[in-house]
Structure formats: structure tokens, C-alpha cells
Length: 178
Image 1 (cartoon, helix red, strand yellow):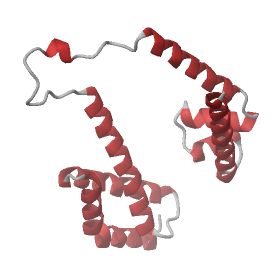
Image 2 (image 1 turned 180 degrees about the vertical axis):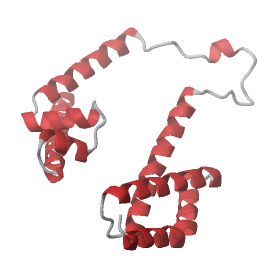
Image 3 (image 1 turned 90 degrees about the vertical axis):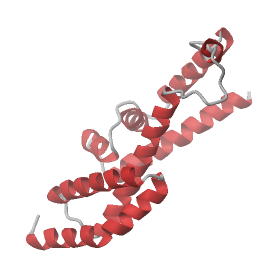
């Protein structure tokens, strides 16, 4: 990173820190979490800027903040789903408040059929779209990483994903209507 780019990034961080933290606080509803996410934003943007040219640091800061805020909300939702907190109205017999360990047999059969239909629809995708979809959804790779592995542009990966999602939506909606 050139000294000019370093100065530009430092200035953008310093000038937008307060606004960014306020924005994150509104999104997350927690000033402490907003501060933590803001620090992660600064670290990620700084790390990214060491290997790439940043033409609009403010936009990069807020885009990164938006993505990390979404990740934080997903993490919270997952945590809340896994940790059931009893309410004040719950009686002492906690056993009757516990749901069954798994779905009933009918639901299990239905879920298996849905999974099979989904996997069949994925298998029916054209090769590059299927590969891009699997790398994105199953391997958790970014479009940039997929593009490198497939030796195509990121816009090609985007097109493959759009095609894959369109075809899957169509195949699964046709299945539900029959």
C-alpha cells in the first residue's frame, strides 16, 4: 500500500468512525456489539487494502460493516434458537415444555423427499452453474474464490449462480405445484 493510499484510508476511518458506530448500533441494537463490529470492519478493510487498491474507502467501510452486521445478526439468531430461556410464566415442570427431540415420522419422510428433490434439481443443473452453486453453498467459498478455482471471471460466477438459483427455484416450484 502506498503512503498516499494509507493516508486516504486512515482519513476515511477517522472521519467515518462515529457515523459507522451509530449506524451499526441502530442495526444491531447494542452499542457494545456495534463497537466490536466496527473494529472488525476496520481490521478487514485495512487487511484488504494491503493487497488491493481501494478507490472509495468510505463505501468499502460501510459495505463491509453491512456484511458484518448481517453476520452478527445471524450469529445471534442461531444462538437464540439454540438457547431456550424460560419465561416468567413457565411453570416448574420443565419436562412438559421440552419439544420432541426430532420431527415426527411423517415430517421426516417429507423432509427426506424434499432433500432428494433438491439434490436431484442440483444434479440437473448445467455443469458450470452446478459447480459454482456447490462451491458457494456447500463449500462456503466467495465468488472471488470460485472464480479462481474455475478459472473464470467473477461476473461469470455471478451469472452461473443466477442461472442455478433460477433453475432450482423453477424445478422446486414445479414440483410443489404438481
